[in-house]
Image 1: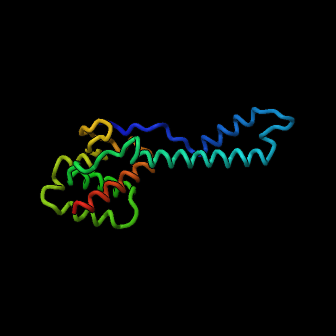
Image 2 (image 1 turned 45 degrees about the vertical axis):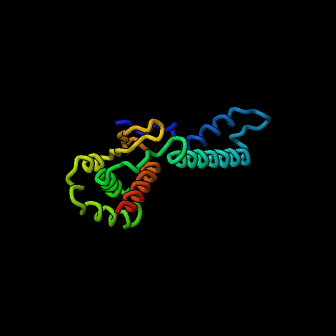
Image 3 (image 1 turned 45 degrees about the horizontal axis):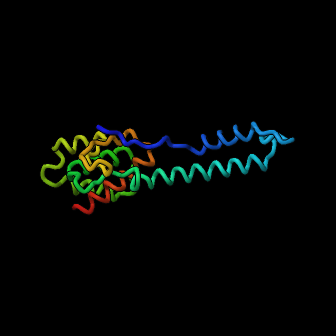
Length: 161
């Protein structure tokens, strides 16, 4: 099983702390920590950087970092992963539940080993980097990225039904 390999996620809090620590060490007559304008600017810059980083990482799943190719993923594994997503509240609305219901009614889906693996958060897909079949653990992803994968799985499964 290969977990998704992503750069460390930087939260706004971590960036804001880093910005205030680095600005707090500057001395130019008044302390940056005491200057409300400097603090506001540092917080705004840190928030913007965090949002940009999160956006790049999320879009990276479908770009350079590569959301695995779901075209060869069996229906049973997609259904199992969608079950994992629904169970862990990683999908929004009732659309995923109806897609899951339709998929599990297909013969052989719900009792397959690929479905069981999917229920545990194991996605069986082809790596875009190596073009080989891999197993990816959704549990190793941060929640926003798991939601992105769940959305892609739901869309793929819906197009197959």
